[in-house]
Image 1 (cartoon, rainbow, N blue to C red):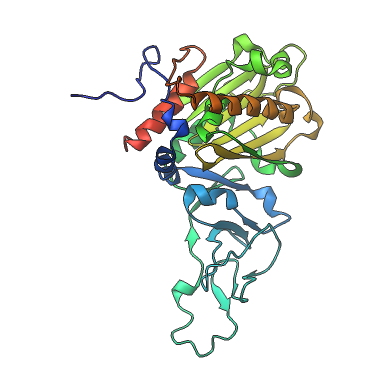
Image 2: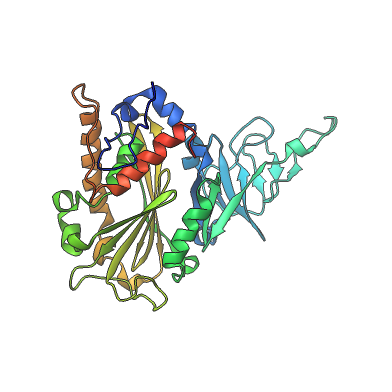
Length: 358
């Protein structure tokens, strides 16, 4: 018997993800084990202006590694685990010329090389290469630092660069006041599902609906990601696009980029809001927001004017949906071919990843 794909490639025929993808612990663990193949947001270069050491606890569950970003003359991603007894080295962002473990005082350079260890003069063959910190690969694009795997990196960055390469993202400033961290009682994929369609905007986000032209809302698919484009209603904030932009002449209110599995780069006329979706358990997810400002005069305006309100509205919906998909009477639904292309694309990538079909 030939078994077809879980998600049909033809959205008109396809059914949505089976409910077990949102509710089963075993399947959650299986999915989580595949996510380290993808690249993930680590930081923006402006965050290193104040602190040259930034731990990345949000990636521990996804990558299976405790990592940190360091900067001296070079930006690196290093293991955040002391090579003595496994203590975390950096537990919060800080500024220092060295890395010092707070447990027994082992010291490393910002390049990860072991420098000093008290009470180890009698230890033979010490230090060795294994006593220094492991360095992990990074990619930096327009000031955004990524780490993790390489899956989809080239195709995604090419797509983003073709669209908004004109934007001076590297010059944006980190705004600590825009940092948020939310723990929600829902599966991470439900949060992504919700992000990937504007179908719900008129029903859930009244204020945002007043800002965006719903009938002109666009969804574009590419390998490893989705772009949604919000068009501004009359009188609302929009980008002043250069002639080189493929969208020149349009009143773009927002570019919403989703990158598999859970990275969201939301570009507004004021700058960039980075949302990361961090799976904790099958029914708990941590959402982290970082804000990087390029044009202060545009803050509080347009589609990116009140992100806290939009987030609260989304969380209420996603948590209620988690309860719904956990019901014995629900198995799966269907897609709107015109409004849920992004969700269908995500479900195809996710299920194909489990089958190693990539």
